Picture (cartoon, helix red, strand yellow):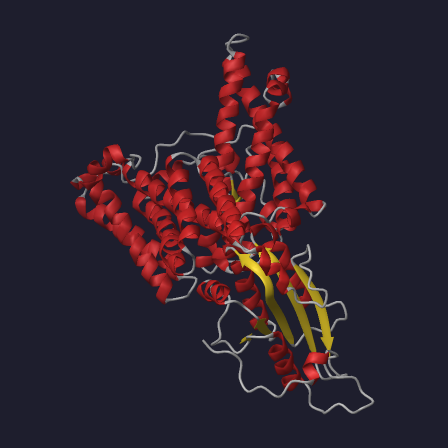
Length: 564
C-alpha cells in the first residue's frame, strides 16, 4: 500500500497491493472514510473497557487488535469478491456521484493544504483570519508554487518538471532563511517547517505478550462497526477506482484491484496496521509527474522504512509551503476539472448532483455526501423514466416489434469472405448507471475479443428503441468512441433522436469530426453505407445478398452520412 507520515499504518509492508494493481504507478494508503470508522471503533472499545480496566496498556493493545482484525476482515472480503469476479456487479456508481466524489476530494485537498500551511482549519467562522498578513504569507507562498506547477505541467510534459520546480522552491525557501539569519528553531516556531515529531520507532506491532492482554469479547461486541468498515472500504475503493479511470482515461480491472487491495490489507492486518485502498490524489500525482511505473512504488518504500524504523526527525526540515503547494495543486486541478470543465459536458441536473455531493462531503461527511448523491441520481432516473412515453415500445428494431428485457441485442453481419465484418447492436430501453457499465463491457468485448477472432470493421449502434439515457450511459459511449478510435473501428450511430444526439455530443461521445464516428438517420441508410464501403463486388444470382438483409439490397448508394 501507499505511505504517509506519522502513523504506524504508513509502513510499506503493504507494497504488494500496488505491485499487483492493473495500473502501473498505483498508490494506496488509508483513506479518510475508513479511518473515521476506525476512530469510532476505537472510541467504542475505550468506552466499553472503562468499567473493566484502567490499564492504558490493555486499552491500547485492544484497540490495535481491533484495527488489525478490521484490516484482516476487509482484506479477506475484498480478495474473495475479486476472486469470484464480484467487481463486475459493483460497477454501478452513477457518473455524477463519481464526479461529486472527485470534486469533493479536490475541496478536501484545498482545505487540507490551507491547514498544513497555516495550522488552522478552513472554516467560515475564521475565514477572515486567513486574510491577515501572517497567515496570508504562509498560504499565499504555497499558492504561488501551486499555480506555477499548474501552468508548467499543462505546458510542458516532462517527468522532471514537477520535481525540478519543488527543488527550486525548496532552495529559494532555505535561501530566504539564510538571508534572514534566523535560526531554524525560530523558523519552526513561526510555523514554516513540519513537526515536531515523536522520536523513536513508529511501528509497534502486536506481540504474543500483548495478545494476552486483548479483550476479545469487547471487540466482538462491536462487530457491527467492523462490518461498517468493510462496507465503507469497499465503497471507497469503487469510487476511487472510478475517479482514477475518469482522470487518467484508462480502464481498470476492478476484480484485479479488489484482489490486490485484499492481499495488501491482509498483510496490513498481520502487521497490526490500518486498512486502506487506492489513493486518488497520490496516484494522480504519480501520473502527472510521468512516473507511472511499478518501480515508483518500490522506490517509495525507502523513505517509508526510514521513517518507520529510524523515526521522522529528518522530516522536521521539510517546508510546509512545499507540501501545501502539492496538495493545493492537486485540489485545484480536480476542482477545475469537476466544477468548470464538466459544466460543458453535463446537463444541469447531473451538474447539481456533483455540486451537492461536493458541499455535503466537505461540510458534513463522506458517507452523507455519497448517500445524498446516490439519492439525487435515483430520483433523476425515476423522473426520466416517468417522462418517457410508453408508446416508444412500438419502435422496436426487429420484426416482432417487441421491446426486449435486455439492454442490447447483438447481430453479426458478414460480407463475402475477405470483405469485412459489421457488428450490429440493437439498443433499447432506458440506458442508465445500472446497466451502462455492463453494456460498455459487452461492447468492449465485441471489439477486443470477438467470438470468431475476426474484429469488426464497423460497429453499428441502433438507437431506435432507446427511451432515454443518463450521464453514466453517455460516459460509456464516450469510452467506446475512444476505444473504437484506438482499434481503427468505425462507430456508426443509427436512428438517434435529437435529444439523445445533444446528450452524446455534449458528453463527447458523438464526434462527427472524427473519421471513426458516423451518424445515420435510418437503419436502412446505415446498412447501405456499410455495404457500399466494405463490399467490392456485385452479388450474382447464385450468391446471397452481401449483408444478408433484405432492406440492404433494395437501397441505392448513399453519398454522405448526417453532419452536424
